[in-house]
Every structure is written in C-alpha cells, then in structure tokens.
Image (cartoon, rainbow, N blue to C red; front, side, top):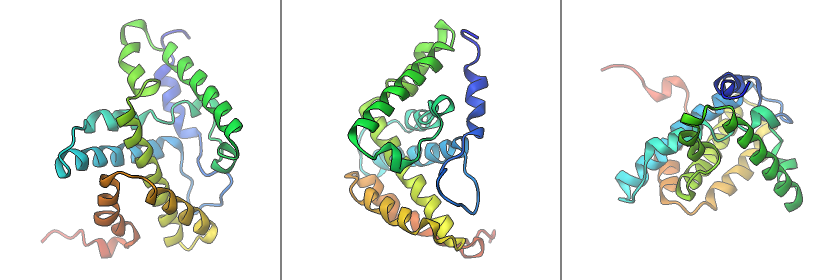
Length: 196
C-alpha cells in the first residue's frame, strides 16, 4: 500500500523480539525497547543541555529513538554476535537496514515523508550518538534486570555491555551511570515510592 501502510507496520514492532539467542526471564520486543531508548535518549539530551551546558534537543533525540529500530520490522532483529562478527557482515547488514528504512519512508505520503526522514534515515550525528548511547544503556538495564531475577544467562552480556558503555566518551552517559543506574538494581520497596 503506497503511502498508507507506514503506521500499520510501525505498530508491528511489538512482534519482533529482542535477545533471540538468550533465555530471558521475560520477553522484550523492539516496541518496548524503543520506548525505553526514547526515555533514555531524552534524558541524555537533557543532561547534555542542562547539566553540561551543551546544545542539545531532547525532543529530537526521543523521537529519533522511537524509530531507531524501525527497519527491524522488515529485517528482524539480527543477534549482536552475528551482526558484529566481522566488518563485511556489519556493512552488508547496514545496507539491508538502509533499504528497509527507504521502504518504510516510501510508505509515507509525500506531504509528510520529509518530516520522518531525519528520524529514520538521515539522523544528525549528534542525535545518532545520543540514541546509540541510550541503546547501550537500555541493553545494560535489560542485563541488570535479568541478573536481578537470578538469570545468569546475562552475566557475559552484562560485562560486555558495561565495557562498551565505559568506552563511550560522553559526559552525560557517565552522569547517568553514576546518578541513575544504581536504582535499577533496587527492589520496588527499596525505591521508596511512598508518598510522605
């Protein structure tokens, strides 16, 4: 359906599961993941702007994060060990992602397509970096939650994801890790949500 199926396909993000090779205590789909990445990207952009005084657009970061895995509706979620096995596979997968992104964009009417292009296919470098960092944070949160549930399947993934986060040279990521990440290891009672 030319120019009309975009949002119907976007709604199918909930059918694409993540962590396909891992035994998880709960299933996470790319729609849920994209929401969390959007929350985290927004937070990183706010921290960049309000704490470190750098120019940043939290709304653009959040919107781009909502669509950052949209191509996986057409490609599926390729497991990380396969996707990053070697440069040739990674380059080929990037080309496939680009074709899928173009296909999605062509499903939008001409009048609004250009408004979605900066969110799907042509994200600015600054926004791309924020979304990529938020994506890593979301993966790390998933690992922490799985380990908290007693699932040792995620021990190596947690360590590797933490190593990747430590290599991100963005002060807002360090700020988030120091100020917000510890709470993800707490129980609901430890979070103390009572109204006083």
